[in-house]
Image 1 (cartoon, rainbow, N blue to C red):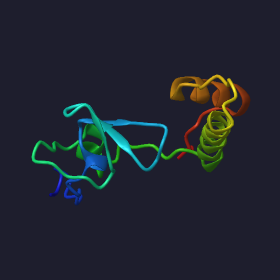
Image 2 (cartoon, rainbow, N blue to C red; image 1 turned 180 degrees about the vertical axis):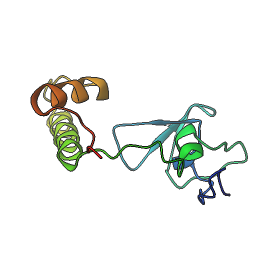
Image 3 (tube, rainbow, N blue to C red; image 1 turned 180 degrees about the horizontal axis):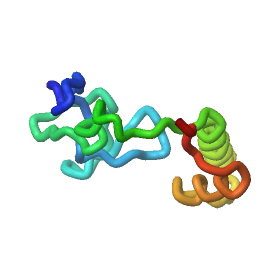
Length: 111
């Protein structure tokens, strides 16, 4: 299916408005069905997410590679702590973003 800007969007959980991201890259949580699903899952109640509707509009921003690496490091530390059954505070994406911006400035590449 194509969005209003002519960008091809695959009808999968990863592009659905009903998905909720989990800490695992390999799964999503479907808010419509209230269960975990794979990113490539498909159902008849799929609806295009707002992000996919805006793809190609030119209003997007590119995140810095350093920020994306920082998010990955934080999530890997949290995952390792979970595996080792160590009490370790998990950060929201808002907190991760705030921490990065305090040390490095904007998370976005400047045009």
